[in-house]
Structures are given as C-alpha cells and as structure tokens.
Image 1 (cartoon, rainbow, N blue to C red):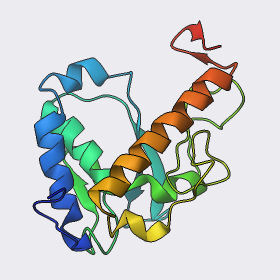
Image 2: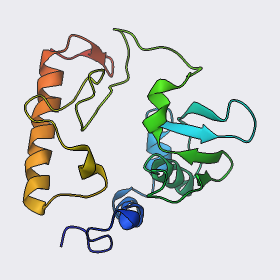
Image 3: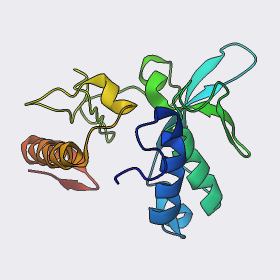
Length: 176
C-alpha cells in the first residue's frame, strides 16, 4: 500500500521517487529554489577524475530541478548500471560518494550553512538517529508503513533536537 509501484522490489524504487517528485515538486520550484537549494551529486566523466563531487544550485526549468533531485537519488545497480543523465549538466550518481570526494567549492566548518543528514547514523552527520540506528538494508528494502511512520517521528525529533541545541546561524538568524 505504501509503495504501489515498487512494492518490495528495490529495483523499482527510483520509479517511485519519480512519481513522488512529479506529485510534490511545485511547478515553480526552479524559481524558488535557485541559489537557495544546493543539490550534491557525484558527476561521472570519461576522463580523470572519473568521479567528482558537484554542487548544482541554479535551475532554469522545472525539468532541470526534477532531473537534479532524481539524480541525487540514483543508486548504482538499483537505478541501473549507467549514471542518470541531467540535461545540460552531464551524467550523475547519487551524492553518496560526494562526501568522500574532493569538492572544489569549499570545506566544512563550524560556521557552515550545510546541514549533513544521515538516516543511518553516520558519525559526521549533524542530524542522525540518536536512539536507534536503522539497518542499512532499509535503503533498498523499505519496512512496513508503521515502521516508516515511526522512523519519520524519530527523524523529526532528531532534527528538532539539532536545531534547538545548535548555536550556528541559519537563514540570517541564530537558532537558539
């Protein structure tokens, strides 16, 4: 019921992702998200370096932001053997590799405006499960609807704790 297209088949999850993006991504998302949203991707090239972290923050059309967000979900093998094409940009895998690649735009620091989120409890993440570490196979074999609702509630609580306990500045205002 939760996954009408994919069911429990991990090879169909990205089709489910496309349907969700199509249903929930506002038609003016490219206008409202330009210079506000940064999509972290792993670009695939035929010349060295073969894999490179890239940040896309300018979107000229709705289909461009759709393609970038879809590419950020592209898991090799489960999404196919080839990277996902983003018109006018290139071929990409998800941002999973991004954190370990050289990213030319800057490094992370205490005054950073990037929030690192990990559903599986990565130690370098700002927001991650604190009470219960999720099994990694949940990424490709989704649990029941009840478990998903419980995970959403835990994720909300973890994000709330992060913003309540941080002294960093977000959007021009200090979060205290």
